[in-house]
Length: 101
Image (cartoon, rainbow, N blue to C red; front, side, top):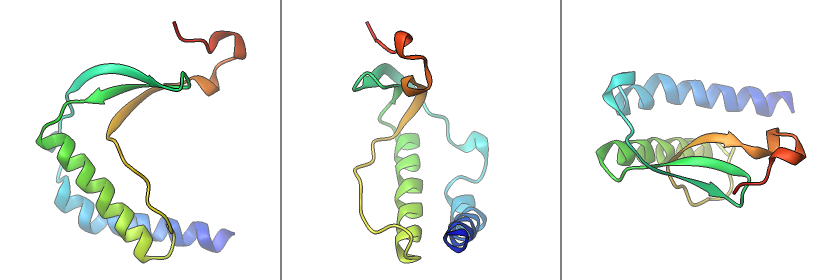
């Protein structure tokens, strides 16, 4: 419903103005280092993130946002999170071009 969408937006903005600014004060305070390219079920091509303090910071942001949304009653389940950088979603390509080699 519209109310649920507005509630989500409100929670996300509140998170951004409070906790996110503390966790990531600027765009340059976190630089992700790529360690390789992989795919998920030949449907998503992604870059793997190097295990370092910056990846840990990104994971901390995810968990903090996830907790905020759970506490607001928006999320009701937990999913495993693996920090990555999505490069291409093959579902957006025409069928003939989807096969990875």
